[in-house]
Length: 224
Image (cartoon, rainbow, N blue to C red; front, side, top):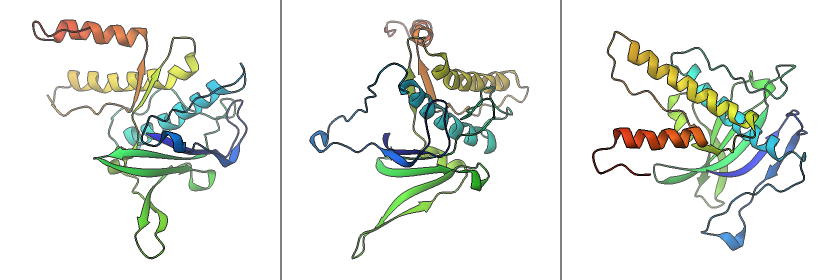
């Protein structure tokens, strides 16, 4: 995924609303090369809050599909992504990003505002190759087929920011509940449980990967 632009329509923790949007254009000198986004600033300037905002937005979108589209059977995870925890106010936002799906790059726009009953609306950028090369956004259906346009979000933490890890940890726990429910079910269903699109890497997860490889790899194939 390549983040293009983000708009915030209400205050999120220490971040003021950005209704006109914060763009992340690709630098011409880096065309065809890695183009990272770096957050630089003094302590307390909002760097962590911005990362938490991104994590919360994609957590909300992932839960929308897993819960409301009945991909998972549990009611909901325990964590709730609020712009204001005291007021229980949801995050109202617009986010644009590029993502490669089935070998083709697409630009996706997701909007959630107060006037659309808090439901996220998904759009895909289309270019009409006519005389003027018209560009517009076509609304995607709010069903399971649209989930493929959500990115895999991988976070790494040293363990010093619990707020940032909460949506990742809770979504992994939510997934584990689904696996356990199926394993304990008498129906004997072999249907694959869909993995969540948020993945956290920390000391514990890395240790689990190493142990799993040592235990489950065939003889002579274990690796570190």
